[in-house]
Amino acid sequence: MKYTSVLSMLGIALICAAGTSCKKPKPIDPTNEGIADFMPTNTQNWWLYEASDGTIFKRYYTGRDTVVDQFNYNLFEQVDTNTGTIVKEFYAKFEGNYYTLLKVDNSGSAYVKSQVLNGDPKVGDEWTSNGSFNYGVNIPTKLESKVMSVNGTFTLNNNIVLDSVIEVKSDLYGKLNFVTWTNCGTITMKFRKNVGVISENYDINVAGFFQKQYSNHILNYHLQP
Image 1 (tube, one colour):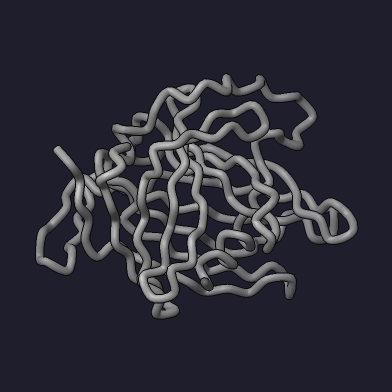
Image 2: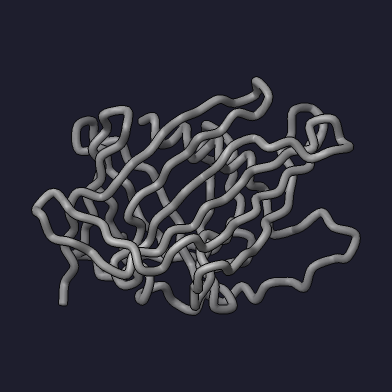
């Protein structure tokens, strides 16, 4: 599934949470506060998506939780409706903000923690994820995220219109020469509280290491009352 490789690519670029600044950041409380207000956690729920590579996939909540590096996550699965390929996905809420685990290798054995949304988003809110990716040496990276809109709309394939859609744009930078920051592309994600992820758009070029244009968007969903 091409979506898996996109997460792998993005994960490498987003090795975050530990930070690389001179001042050591305050550790994040690993207690999962629950993400039901972001992505409802009922095992009967499903979300259907279409990707730019033609993939159609469904996301499900498994009802199981997983501890990774002492942080507790709600475990979801993304299932390709054509091949049945399953990709594990991890979501959690730490200290009021929403996080996911992104794959950093093709084997799916390594993950990194990344903030995708703040708890009370307002237009103009910003945050930065710092880290590095490794190509024999650690290359510093940062992802500067900003809330662009909180009142957008999105029309599903059954003509139902979602309101209060939140858009977050992230600019990816890398110190490819270890001195100055180079813009390596953008990631735009849309969310709807009490529904979940609405769409994702990746336009990334990391100086020949990665070059990827990919998007997906929600077609339909079912949430148990």
